[in-house]
Image (cartoon, rainbow, N blue to C red; front, side, top):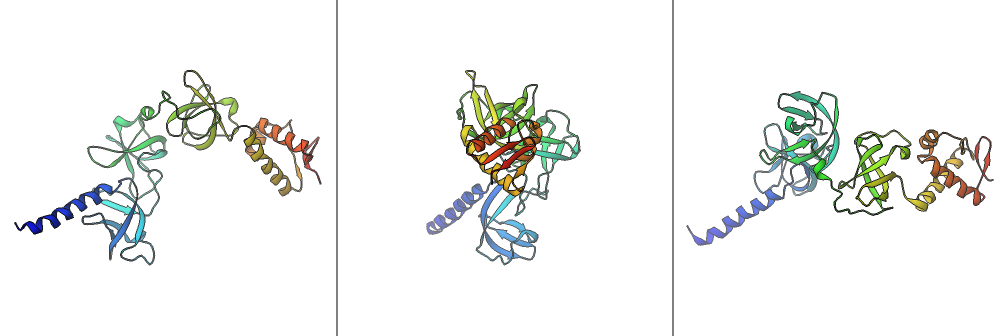
Length: 297
């Protein structure tokens, strides 16, 4: 073999491997349109290309354009791209609905043209069509396809904490307990939202904003919805004033109103409502009446 031809061939092979390895299955990828064909567009993957079916090709797309697409395997095990937005990508935890059940497992609605499979061994109990289950998406090592699992406890640990008290955090409702709701904190830790701190209906899989109320010596964590301390009150001051202005200066709520009614209307606990309206009263911006609160003219 001519030695001068070896390097270019090796370079091409090496480049192909790099590009192919860069494709993230079950996630979004920025890819270049290599060629437009009757059935859609082929995106450059360093090999034969990944098909973006015609229905998902952006209007006026042309060769060389860089587009953001979601890549997954179709029913024939080919990589395919779409501009549809799935309910979750690899690494996400999401509440997905079972749409098909068979002896090997179940298929969950994914939000793209293909459902995601969860094997029986990855289920905590037998799934039923129409049931919704909290699962994590991962790449199955044997098939290299995206799969789902309900066995997600090992993903969370409170051994080494990355949060502190009063820190704002992302929360997801994990499961119900006798004391309240077990919450996933920042996709890393587990905490408890006590029943006494819940003022609206929440369900497994709901994503919420909150903060760390208390960390115990055992690294157990209590959390609360909303924002901490005075920052929380200051945020709510503007909300109460805006709602008063939108309702002709009067709202039929006071310290005798039901906590659930206050939360449904204001999106805050009764305690926060009382702190906020007390603050506004001291500033002489509202007055209390037997029937509610009134904006000072």
